[in-house]
Amino acid sequence: GAGVSQSPSNKVTEKGKDVELRCDPISGHTALYWYRQRLGQGLEFLIYFQGNSAPDKSGLPSDRFSAERTGESVSTLTIQRTQQEDSAVYLCASSLSVVRKETQYFGPGTRLLVL
Amino acid sequence: GESVGLHLPTLSVQEGDNSIINCAYSNSASDYFIWYKQESGKGPQFIIDIRSNMDKRQGQRVTVLLNKTVKHLSLQIAATQPGDSAVYFCAENRMDSSYKLIFGSGTRLLVRP
Image (cartoon, rainbow over all chains, first blue to last red):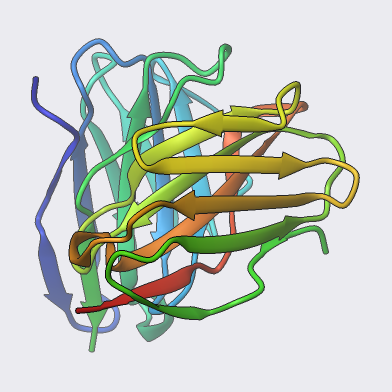
């Protein structure tokens, strides 16, 4: 079946603008995760959803970052008033569930460049 | 702080040789470990995982070894191929947070033809 998809694949924006990044998880996966990957670095956990709820938002870097999920499917990560340090690849992953530590499958990422 | 890290940032091997990528973790509460492969411009791809009640697990051309005594994890790739060239990440999952993967900074594997 189809894997995790993300859009847009690339986004260039000006400092101070808002951006929305979209993630479509694998069908039937109840858990969804957002990570950030700066150039040449590992992945940094941002937030996860179990269903439509986000029990742990502690990984979000600042209050400019928010995320939501609807219909236990699509999720949107929003960054308000973007800063240059927000430039990174934003990766989404999904898994069957959270409780049983199911494998997380990643999408291709959205490459965000803030000028 | 606690982290998952790697010993070698870049590993260059001859095609056909075996590759060993190492990873150290610092939290003894971690009970699940995963290796991911990331090719340029793509998201991480699951390779193999291992739970803390095991010392070794084998897949197709890959083997993961876990040494809990010294908190060390390794990924062995047999008969390395050009298609294995990528960045490899180890990640740990802790007992108290089943959802959160803590990633190392990655090792780049270069396969020489």
